[in-house]
Length: 313
Image 1 (cartoon, rainbow, N blue to C red):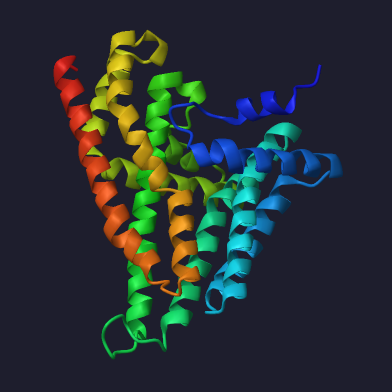
Image 2: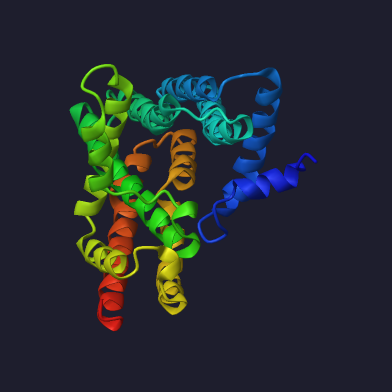
């Protein structure tokens, strides 16, 4: 018997702990509806991911303009890019067409969108005066967006993703999480043939570096995780009380991981562009989201340190 739409939708959620309400009630249902349509038409998931990149680039170009209609068009394009981002994964699961290239493209897609957005903001601000002073933005706009994008955005999304996967690991076990580590990913790279595995080597080399950056930023969790794995090689052997205590401390932080990903950024971007004050978006990333990032990071590290001591790990 085929599953109903609601059953397929529920199956696409990783957990109630980590899903954001806007995704549950808006993005995911629309993404699934598109996935079912594309599946009937025989469209490959990678095609949808590539489409999302062009939509994101188009949105960035629209946001470089100051008039209302270009900005509304940018909002629509960015929303459809996000729908495509939801659709490609659901389509891959529906059709069983998961590929390594697909994983690579999925990781690149949102970087392409937001790079286009930052460039759009730079072009838009370049010849404008800074607020409250008679000085043109010029290269300061480029510096502002470079700090927001290449420093804050990258760092915030990387840690938010890591904390979600950690939470899912303690909640659902390894099968319900994508919690990986540098050592195992580098071992895959080392085991690949020197010739004839270009895409595999490119993906796993980049992914190993990504995991390494996550690990370097979380020393207290790394100590806790090493001790956990040494004592309980299989997560199912871990005492339920330990898992419950970790969930109780980690769950309040999940709202911050959601704030540090797409929806809050998109909403701030849309408001800033519609009001013709687009600089509030990179400032929001640098000031507001960085504050949330540091609070989340400090709280998570303190949780791991406390549990390490409490359970004598």
